[in-house]
Length: 196
Image 1 (cartoon, rainbow, N blue to C red):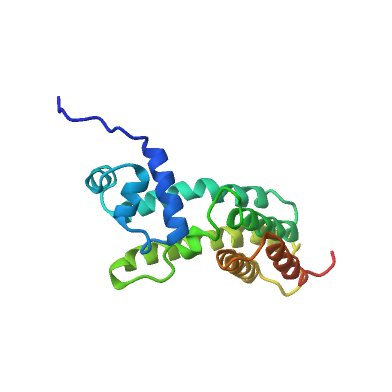
Image 2 (cartoon, rainbow, N blue to C red):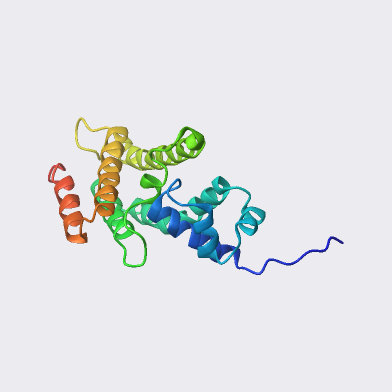
């Protein structure tokens, strides 16, 4: 039977600490030494527990899904395309301007621009953002097939619009926009919708 010291830390708690650092400073802005110190580990212990920084980041992204997935699940339960869109935007406001979380969105700012050495991380995040938009488009497609989208609107374009506004609000939150200002943006974005 192999012998060795058992891990003296809670892995889920350590990943949550890493998530908050990556969320605040991005992938490249968060040094492995900073991660280790915040988690109460040595750098060697971080590598032993999680492999390299990229694998820890991707674990943190999975953990982030606990914060963000619920907003889409709730929005997708709405019974009109307009309510789904509004649900996504209001959920994003809660996510990017929450009192208990860093400002902005890990999926947007975590690895939007990276050095060539971190290109794989940037591509992984881009794939995740595209997948989220595809999920939104699939929900809108249900309304489109039922003839419940305004004339001339497509599910795909509408998903792109809603996700672009949501992404912009995340950037604005990271730049210091208040919750009230983000609510104004969401209200303005929804003014394009015809009266139903």
